[in-house]
Length: 415
Ligand SMILES: [Zn+2]
Image 1 (cartoon, rainbow, N blue to C red):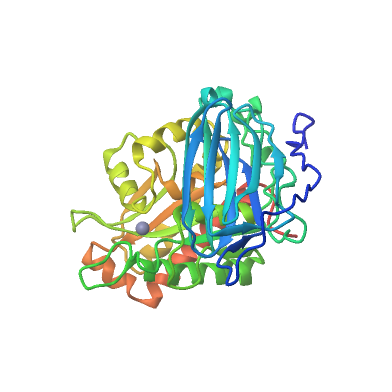
Image 2: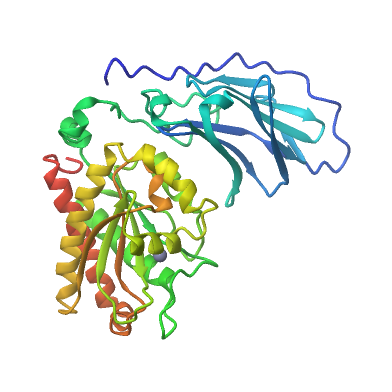
């Protein structure tokens, strides 16, 4: 670990267990909030209140001092969290506090410097229900040279099941442009998060015969997991293992929490021109290619952010070294996937590797790619995508690509 990489030094103040307001009435409907999580990413700060059950909430901002607050209704705070405050060493967020505001309202207050933040976002996620506050600083130059907290001290005692996100590298390292961080450090790959796109009420693309993208993505994801675990001894984690929906932001949060080394999102493509077919692999980047923007809009459909908003965030992220590794991983997967699929469909087109603004790839702190294995909008490819053989070949191709990438790092998987 570099010396410049001091712990963010989140100071957990002594747990002041303040006396709660008057005892709740009989038939208490309040949900108890027991956990608050905080992540400082290189490009934003995320605060998560774990709630567990659906609750209404409101949010707003105050000036002098600058503050963003979120009120969770019908909620009570676990005494351990009551009055808890967390100091944050960024120049745009200074302190996070959570307290019982009224007998049935819990307030999260985040002290911010509005002159240093670009925007913030308050939203909810399901399964389990939780509220998320993301705060984006203004301009990359204002972002402190930091990586996620080496130790997430915001996790209260008794709830340490989620390991902190940890990276022993400095994204501001000037050498990064010469050789990527992963290569410099000889990092190996132990954990791969596989993300089968869409799911549940969100089918993704639907082919002419009715085949749904979410089904193909899951089948290929499950097969890929099997290969990684059984053939390479790599820890492979799926963002979903059944037909359920997982929020786009959540997918990389899972990857970060599992401290994954690689993130591979699996999708099936569609194009207005039904004659168009083939394989393409994307990594996160700003793309001037309108066709990529169109596809990205499709894949981003469930995100609450639009492409315009993303662009600001993207501009800050592009310089991040993970882009180069993501590109290399995308190249290896694309090459091997085309090779594998062409054994069953010799005419399959290689549409190449492209940068694109895919929301699902933004939050990941590891090399991240999105693979569009073939086109469901193309009837020939749809027929193939229905078969177990073609799905197995897709998984094999992606697997071969991942393994080629790992070998190229010069350091294999878990010894
Ligand atoms: Zn998709």
